[in-house]
Image (cartoon, rainbow, N blue to C red):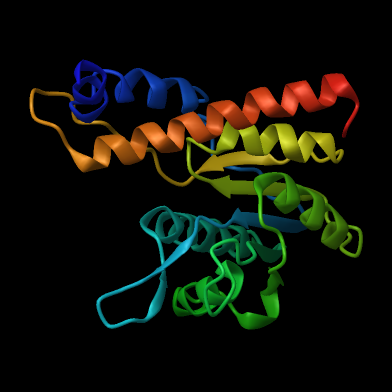
Length: 211
């Protein structure tokens, strides 16, 4: 019961989330090359009250950040493209990438400048499948957009495939510490544990030579 309260009231959720989000936002704006590729990672979908499949909150932040980066990139006169990476791990009616696309288009990103990678089911597969897409693109600047909690693991996976993207954090999650239990604190704790276990798994698999 005490452990339940420590998570729900935020006393354990907060340090776990801080640990998962330990990489700070880079202090300078991203650098744009003559051909810049912006990779946005998926963050799930859900059905709203009208039974419409929509992006989750973290995904909306990533979409907004990617659109802002794209707009800034275009102002430099560069060739700019966005890769939306996300399959359908929840087995909904459409992939994450396909669901996010209309939201990105609404933010004035032309369809011709968007590439959909809609098969990957994990962060590792995001990196693997994006690496395959990038083999067909002659780019000189690579930017990775995702939430703070996912960025450390995402960079490990992208580095595994020989990619060194410039990280841009779209949003940071926060825990409300107090006396009353909060459902959101459980969600944040689960997210943090998922990322921390994923990082540990990555290093174990590399040590075993599995990838």
